[in-house]
Length: 381
Image (tube, rainbow, N blue to C red; front, side, top):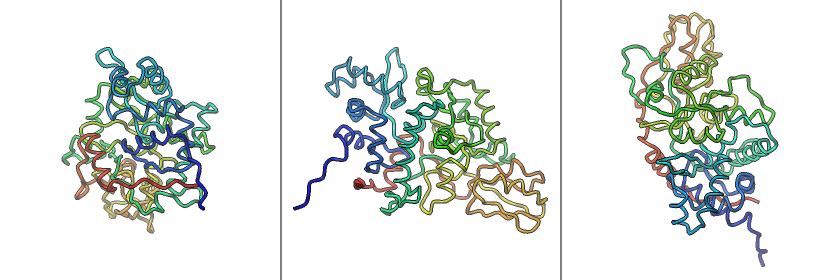
């Protein structure tokens, strides 16, 4: 007779896992001990229970309590606790506080490390996330559940966006390829600590690149900043951060939507999982290449090798006295062009580049369609 196995977690966390699957995001839900250990570090059981009932849109306490049958005062207390722990977004609309449930990534992971906190809880969370990511992707010398199951990564949640000033004059630049347009059209911009680099620093793997360079956009970032998660920026300050990031050799990545963007991450290859997935993963990446690609005029190359050191994808190598360009590896970030003293490197429109989904709804639909509603993963002992 087969021995009955004990549940891997409390039912509140199973319900939350179901809800996280429906919310989508860039990281799949892999039901394993490391995943539930992470949820239990983030949420109390009562928080997990209420979070599992939240819809995929902003909702007030009274509307949520009406839908769920919970006591409004108790629901407000729990929601405020979660907002203060950055487990959901909050904003005030028409004088009423509203709350939004968020995915694990991007969302909870980024928010936990955006303050630069170095407390014991922050260190525990860093290890919990690391354990789960290793199980999911096969890090730390182990086979990843997600990759071992043979599933492709979903439609890219993020995309690289080119350094704007390196696009040659005369080339048509569409609005969704222009960071300055998003900055101009956004009322609220906030900046916080780079969560990838801070997460790594908490694990003993520091980075010398600038850390306060990752920006969020839209009304939610004001609510987050009011709770201490980031600080608000002027448009000019946002442009200065882009310039500083470019000078430091960081790659601009953003949400893969056209109407608006939720964030601009300025990424390093040493710690950014997105760039590493583009560089190393055999499966499709979680991030799309930009709509531009580098071109090289060998006769004009001075052989200085500055671009080789600058390229995060190893798309450029020295062959004798001149540079060689591997177009298959080029993500079109523009970092190489920005340091080429001879003008041998330039950017051109990428042939067949796709138009990003219009908004988050279209993006989620594209991601779910691309994986064919991936079935629930098995628990691991």
